[in-house]
Length: 533
Image (cartoon, rainbow, N blue to C red; front, top):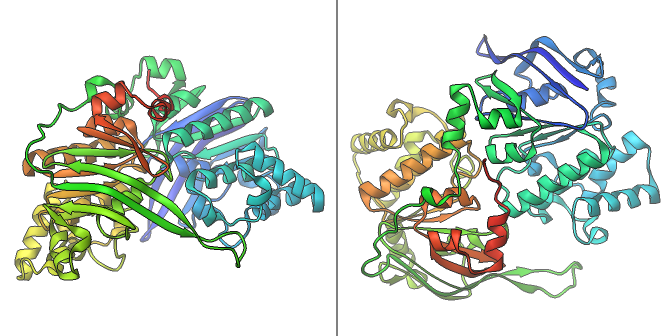
């Protein structure tokens, strides 16, 4: 149905040309799913964007063809191509927040595709949009029709993207990392939805992912890419049972697995805890649908109790909206609480005046989920990493700070010579290493890690986890590790807390919670985790 032949994509940078996709060929059949796997920078997304001719300006097609039922898409006019996008080929983008128009209501965004490709208007258009919203699992479609993207969670925004992609009933669907950064239950729902729609319509699908467990669930055939080239391809069963290429075997080796053998040995918990949280409650004001409606209170965290000891990793898991990030932000006093007590090294953080809180933060640091968003793009790596030293009045000599930053960069696996570069000059994994170096700069006792590996490919994720474990052993660091990836939890955590609708519903040693759960909700999360054979 769709055939890509000898595709070469070239990037123009500073007068030089670099091949970013090199001589790629693959065929995709109606009713079947081909999965592209590989690490960041391997050319997966660029290949997909080339099919629909949405490449960024710096990337061009040098040679090759993309034929849809024999028609070369690369030689169509833009007008002709507009009749292919949406109508013949649907596209689910990796980041729905960036793909959706923030000032258009959701119903109107779905309706655009129906009006353009199916000519629907008025009542028929509204009815069809409501059908699509219901089909992708959006509750109360009549009410949500008029909502804007920011009023939806990440999983719900991805469902809206799928509704837009499927609105004109395309013959072929491209899904670019559609479940990256989603919790396991939402991921399972999205994958079920895509497979059910494919079966009902007989669509062909090109599915892009770096998660081999998801690839195993979705694929009829797989294509493994590395640095712009196809290194291995074949049927799902053949490739998973006997991978040939060393790179494919490497991806299998570093993919996290939820198995008892992956668990850490329990940490000896002794003495007073570094962090003790008692009866913590966090509420958000929530206005009703009308401007005159009374403001209500939404309970984001309810009666939370937890402890973290020196040298220990406590993982907090749960679905999106369960209160994990709110809990972490509140412990850092980045979010106010309604009631409760947070004691760090025996001091109540909520009772500390600003100057005392600033000093306490030297020993209580954070690594945010999105490293790029947490850095000032106008600051160099040197300035970013030493910012805490300057704020805390440590190492006042510039030469001493520069030497300290160089040592930290080396410790997290980066070249100290890169300290003069800016954040945009690094990959996602490298930026996360910079964030870890920044957190380590002031020699903290505890680090709150908020989804630090959720959007990283498996090999970079493995490197970050290895780094965190090594730093913990060397320096006795404690981590409060917020994540939805239960495979990562098995590799890193000594104890696990499970949150649901703002409450901690289960807690205990990692082995007990992950392999002998007591609560139905925990069992549901574990059942939703895709597994490798």
